[in-house]
Length: 431
Image (cartoon, rainbow, N blue to C red; front, top):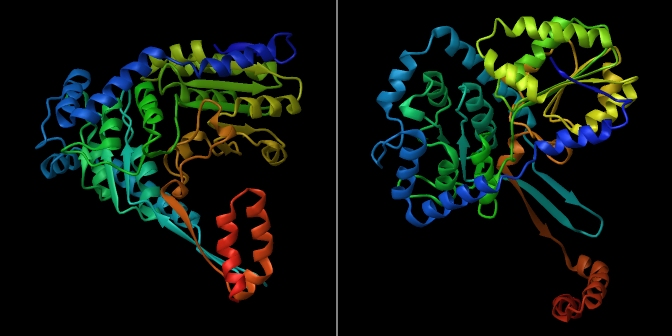
């Protein structure tokens, strides 16, 4: 059952603040462990990398077998069903089409003072795609991470995939091969982030690392920030559903469970103005969980991070949503469009009863790599923009120097930078 919170209760806002802050806990032990791993790999390269692969993943590795071989990939493809591979192809085509539509165009700005500014979008040279492992396998994350980079024009794309005990889902390897990724490293955890950040004798360093992972991966990306770009510091999955009484409880429960099954830290929240719906959803959660394979994870997830929030009106619900800033928001109300326009903080919005969050996870088009832990207040989901940088080329004329130069000189003088002013003045004198 969902933990009940009522908006009208005196301590409601305190409880919400506690829930939000609890997902941002600082773990000093993890920070220190990750720092040690990063420094060790930075200073000692492959020797330390292989040590941590053995220690944490029980994988004995060398420079010769750190990447999956052609034989490994061929074997993986043979172990995939035709149906699953066809589904991957359909998703790939849709995700590519969406991201191509997203590409920005170069532009030129010109004005009457004869100023011209050309803006050019340039792809990063290299990217490392971290494919999460752990309690589940995510071939969909291959598509959601690799395709935006490819569409943006990144030339060198490397993937890293945790393979505890040398085990990996064949569909993950087959999907990476379908996407044309040539170097697939058998590395996971903080050691993967360290290797991609600094490079080792057998691992290429990159300009950006993207992809979700566990607490150690997130902490490693955080510590790597001063040396490379990252997409975001993604935490456990989240869904918030806003639903009125005109909804099927079994559908709402199914959507909540779709996120709760990720791991015990996943968060599932229902916000509603209907006690009857909340009661029915709770019954459905119990009944549907019985038939699901990951029921043990789901039960812990719902018990620790599942909430049913009762509000008196939708206005209060909008305030709660913008405060929580969930990774996934599903709006199941009569006034969907009006509510959607008032939501400013959500990683992605699913605005229709026929658009379950799971469709977005796999096949709609936008990347499912999204900000969590309230970061949707200041970050967007992964897109081609993460792999692009903007460069400006400025040109002006004699007219520009004579009309705008005096103002620029005055500003330079205000800042006490007379050499700046002189570089303009010397041109005005000769014009």
